[in-house]
Length: 495
Image (tube, rainbow, N blue to C red; front, side, top):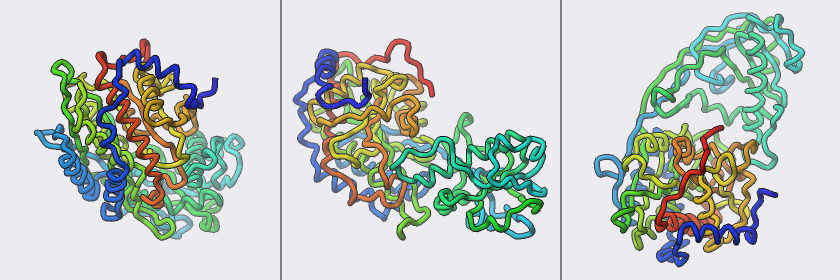
């Protein structure tokens, strides 16, 4: 059976979900969700004034403060640390230090402008290059490159990016670099110098900020970022091919620096009305950070992320307003996670150290990019095995869609082995890892994803309005049900 589920096919599932939840399909506060409120909040948070809300910057903290104030205005109560709206945590960055130097054939290359270093690595590499050009990896003898620095052309990856997706050159380059590098390092190369082909060359400038920004992750023992211990991997643009040839001497003296800085999530609650269920929570999730200021595209260097993920933040504020107007039996918890773009810092922090009692979160409805692409099509992830961990929660969401939104659901993005691997790329993931029922609402990738062109004027606000009503309706049904949605028997989290 096709995984593309059309509207008519959901009717039977809707009846099952009704039987499970005994849900009230009137959704008493749904009319408090308005397109005007969504437009106002998106326009404010996706403004250039917040400079793209990059994790760990003052801009991200200013955006978090704006959300905390909006949550207060909406009427949501603080549910973070110390009776505040905030939950802070540390992020760690490891990056190349300014003292790092690279030369080839006696010519110095400026890191970040003339040459890129794939990962922060503290090492010295010194030797004559072996030029293997475009020779397929399987035809390169191990003995030829073992113990030597190797220079090569990039080759097309075996798994190219999905046609029509955004950043196709960037994705092409990332795949090409991984494949070519892995093959040469496995043969014993002590360093790899990659020269762009014509497609990867388009992505070179997009990566130029990498050495300055470094690698950033949530700062725990389990996830702490450290300098890599693999040989250095260096990336040159196509116009530097003339400087790379057999026997040229590579000298790379690379050092790293590391520092910690704060990031934060905003946590708010609409308390429930049922004395027996008030200490159980339906968690509505979104991330508020984006990519900050980076490589310019069409003259714009601020990555505002209007769809990714201001659209979801505005939706959560609107849903919060509805739950304040008419609370559910269970409490509605709203977490605006920070640092999603830097390794799920906010969601890992909250899932492992919740500010509500452990075990009290009955479901996570995560929202990430819900205002682009075809107006009548949506994706819901966590609905197809092995990603699906609660059939009851899925059926409730299907029924709510049928009742208030009527989207045609494309579930193909949830298939195991989908080339975008999208189920594992948003803030529901840490909650799934610890066995909480999860769903991921999205309108999927689009041509301006992770570019400065993800702007407010490109959003479909009617679609955002319908998505918001659907997410609210799902959450309302879960909040009203006699029993919390159960985890499917035998389910385990796996990649």
